[in-house]
Length: 511
Image 1 (cartoon, rainbow, N blue to C red):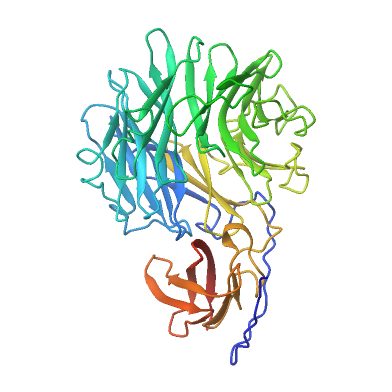
Image 2: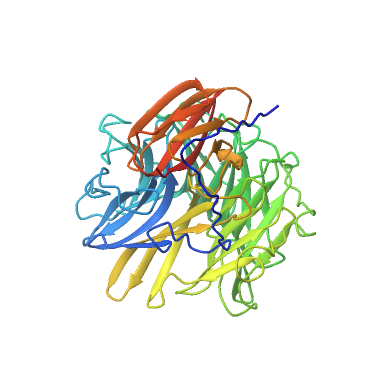
């Protein structure tokens, strides 16, 4: 049974404050208005994002001057540039002069370092992985000479990168086969060496028999393998099940794959997740009579359409009446309560954020338009793109990355927003328990310096407190009390461990 204790604090009385935010609206605590346009001096853009345990926002992308270089950035949780990373928050990698290189994927390892996936667009297109240290430098001892190169053909294209539950790096992409394009799946150990237990040489190539099949995304399956979603020239999308050893797994009615098409229309599913019940959720778009609408599809673990999802197994979404704009599920995440959050664009200057209930219908309480939030990052932009989304360490906040074009300048684009204001954000409550990954109660919060911590399970654990710039300022174990009287006013990150589980939240000190 969970026990929450209270602590009487003498000499400091805090009044509970509750900030009221509309779901989907920009977070004004992030760079003062929820948006950050970063001019790094050259044409640039961001492709993927990851957030570490301290709330620092890592991104990967490209910079052109005039040839493409790999770009890695890191922001502090409040959206300010992290000066301790690289050179003023930026690392550029240019391994091959006069050749275009792009950073496309990023994940964080359990030690807090990052692995990025890049592609060289020269005649021999390879996928290359690098490990990035916390200080913003490339690890020269990782992989083979500081990198891991995956070269299956003269045309390898990257799709998506994940870290599985065993700490292994898994990616999906596309490679040129004998007659057409095939799905490429590779698994690498955390030290950058190929995982020979996966298809002998760490790489498996899957030919599903279609003219061209493009690997888009993958997710770890409940059985320990992976589900891969791909698009094909036959206007269908394909879902393939691969076992942990790299072979096809007969999960789908005694087959290793199945295809999906929305009616007879062009169907492109490019994102995939697995819910707590083992159902497979896919997101992308469907093209109907030349108009593209955002599309979600849910199937059961055997590949059969899940009719409990919007009564048909699929649902289309668009901010405006059909046939006016083009939409697409760019990225999507599950909230702790099983609701689906996804981002889309519906023009060169406007975006929409949707929240969908587990039954496949829009959540009418989300946003400013009956189930979605629509907006624009700036009234003067020419165009912009959103490419990836991730939850941050701040309760109910997510961050989006991409690029934005204002006049003659390309900017790196960051956008933080509130996605669930039904639960209080850190620093906005007094002794109210957080939920999900932040299920750690700290009372009072804000506080003068003395805090009581209640863990998800009864008992004590190890508690570490970090300053906003990432310095360890307090550490204690086997206690539920923290005396932080000696620390200055401000926000601090709390990371606690109990029984092999890690929890995190933020506290605010106000003397």
